[in-house]
Amino acid sequence: MFAAAMREKFSRLARKYGQETTFQVWVECVKNRGEVPQTLEGRWHADMSLAQAIKILNEYSDSIEKLICKRLEEERKKRE
Image (cartoon, rainbow, N blue to C red; front, side, top):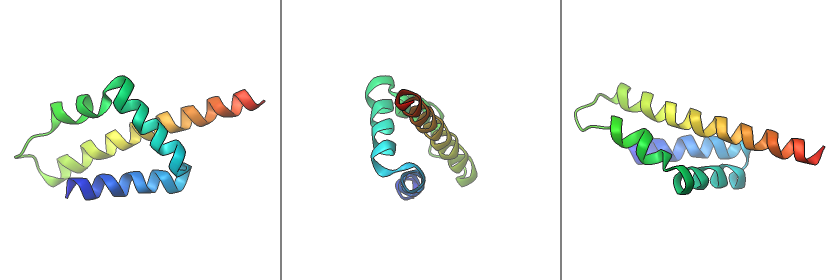
């Protein structure tokens, strides 16, 4: 269920900001900063409620969205 929810979150980001940009930012986070393990592993446990799991997933996707917006803004400034 978690995998399906995560796919949906990233699918929404890809539709909103573009598939390539979303993928690049996510890969950068995983490779360079290791944010996926730090964000999810330390807070994820088997007995948590669905509401708690969704809250963590939302926080993670929100942080990815902020990074996407930052990257798009930097790209826009470079073009000017």
